[in-house]
Length: 139
Image 1 (cartoon, one colour):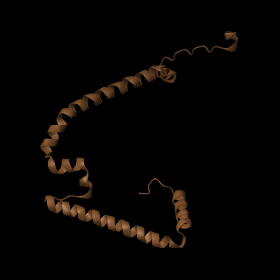
Image 2: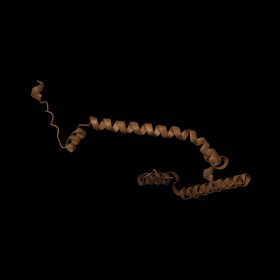
Image 3: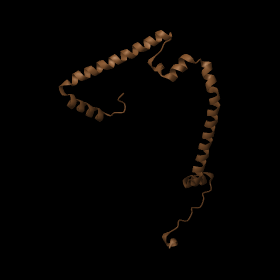
Image 4: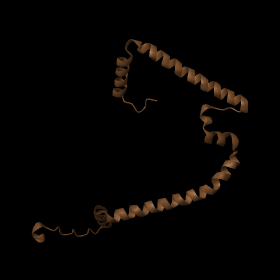
């Protein structure tokens, strides 16, 4: 829950809570923990009621509409029948993107002067270095 906060931010939040609530801070923390506990119990009771009503084992994560439909309404064959037309399109698209990626790599390597120099030394014949223009040549 607090994964994106570092220790300094947590310390500032605790100091701010201490300044705002003062002596009542332990009571506020106790009330907050009690509220979280009650919410968890309510969620657990709701999933238990749904499990009893539907006659299946339902977890809290299964209440997401897509997960609920996938797990309880579609069989594996139905899911495969839905995915089959899209799988071919996905495979073709993946192959095209991979081909474009390889072509871009080749173009980038051929446009990179360092890569051309490396290729020349790898074949055994080093290309002659291009003369560098000087300031005197330009004026």
